[in-house]
Length: 350
Image 1 (cartoon, rainbow, N blue to C red):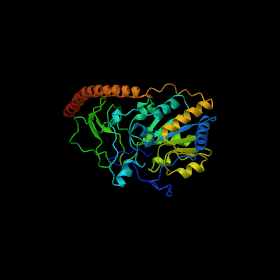
Image 2: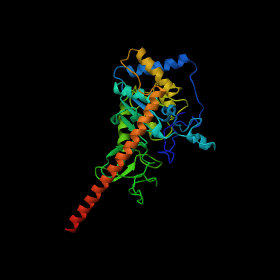
Image 3: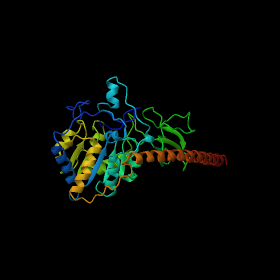
Image 4: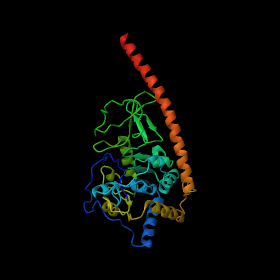
């Protein structure tokens, strides 16, 4: 079920041979009994509430399969089907997808200081849409909804996938900043400086975003617990970030298949849990509350079909309104850019 949420146009990094004994197409695994499963969840909950605990959570595509987004190396994953010559699974428009139960609980855990930081390999924007602040998240492989000015580096988070909805500018211009040959130009101008906007998706042979990687490495190296949810941990360099860097730190992995870092997890004194991510998070919430941890998950806003449908409708309306506002802002940005360009030419002339 689980793997890093790589863009179909290219992988952000190479495969790792960190644990060559684990085959890529490993079968689905399950716990031998509910007692063993519950004991592992209770152990992770105890690590989270230990004195001085610093918890960093790492998410892969497995957290989003509950949202009907296919993973990559699961039995019905994108790459699995491709390797087997099968038709690839359909992916719904990301604009229509709601954050899962797990996305919402992780936001609550961060807001209540039980989790310090989130490191994600997904590009679906669901952590942000679940309310997670940008300063509590590293998106190692980019975000389909985020575009960045190539001049002043201002970021714009949209209500639509920026690499699919193109603007009117720079259509014939080559993306000289791209290392993969894939153009990241979105056709829109920065409203601050009039510069070129580019999408933030990371493709094969392209560098991961430096600030995101540095923050992810810092937070993970200082963590007493790195908890991996829904990743096979086979793509470098992301698969090395959760490996414990200090004595006594633990790595725990929740995934339905074996991963490239299972050995490191067991050597650190951590556990491997073979459960669906939403099922694990429900069990973890119950265990945290059982252990008298001051954690109030409350009434999650998207926990019923009616609420999810209302969310999709509201999000669609926001997307359309965003598109209209952006169209007008883009025209104004172009006018300012042309005016500045004319002023510079005039200054050079004089």
